[in-house]
Length: 493
Image (cartoon, rainbow, N blue to C red; front, side, top):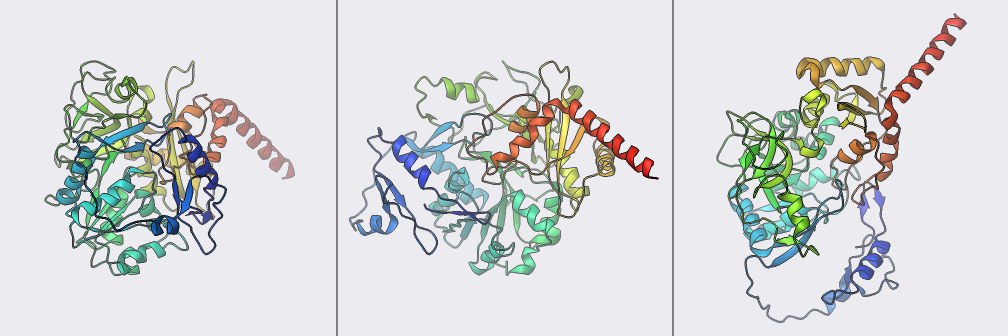
């Protein structure tokens, strides 16, 4: 593909295409690339080896009858790459049977898709949700593939597609919903949503405020909001929607069928895991096998990387890496954040989603985005919580706002949830799928130097956070500057 449009910017992919061809030169099964031109003037691809345009490729196709090969359930199907935001991307090989069975189960039973349906999942081709999008074809569902920013040329353009194309199943993210809410866009007033059956949300934790906005303001009451969560690792979900049970604010409606889950005590670092009571946060695990477990990792012949990624913590138990809890009454599965990003000041463990929920609910008019991470440098006895706020245009960060944020967090959560430091930031790092990224910032403020992942939309944003590795010095300097300013004002008086 040449020149996709992301957030209003045109990106030339030809350099990456050359790198792909070079990297695949020793793979005998690799035939070449097909380039799909964009915009009015197609880019020149003549210098890219083993590459042809889409029109050339289609002109060479024949109308011969397709031959279907018989395969084993666990034969390799495709490689899905993890985001790489927590380290080197994993090359996860999914099986034919596992991926197809899981996708059909989720489409037919959880989301009720079929030949009468039209699905639009907003995703990039590099995210596992692209596979979930095209897998709707398994149920006879018509699919809509959308390329580009959902916010261009204006915030209502993408929304109007839902009505114009009579979309029945719409897949999006909390980030998209938050942008609609913050900018006063009401989808049910923008276009006719009478065909819409369900909306799935994934990619990050869906806040309670967005649950309320969805039904109170954004969408028709009849639409089923299915908050789902799973991952590239399983090409499916651990938490899914359920058309047979009520939708409660917060969390996912329950586990995905055929995927066993448990919540283990996160304080047990290895060995035999122990389940915690419902309502107690812990580590999300799968204590038994399930069909869509990955077949293997590409170029991991011994399986050591595969084992260390999922089975190194608890004996014969899959560890997914999410910090979750099961509601004691509704049995909703609540996701509080990544386990490696759990905040742990003075032994009190909580997820960053709890802080984000407060910021969105009480400070949404002033604050555009927030990022909450823990800082524990070499020599630090305890972890301290840092909160970074990106202000809305026209709004100013102030000492008063900082104190107000602390006050509200202490009142709504507890005194132990109050961040030690709160700073203004110009930007928050996100992936190309608009998921905010915590771990690299956590590593940076804890004194580490990292190489930005290629999956980041704005890798340059990480540079800002290096100064906070010496936060005491930074705060001391800020205090001295403020004192000097106060002294100058007094002398003028």
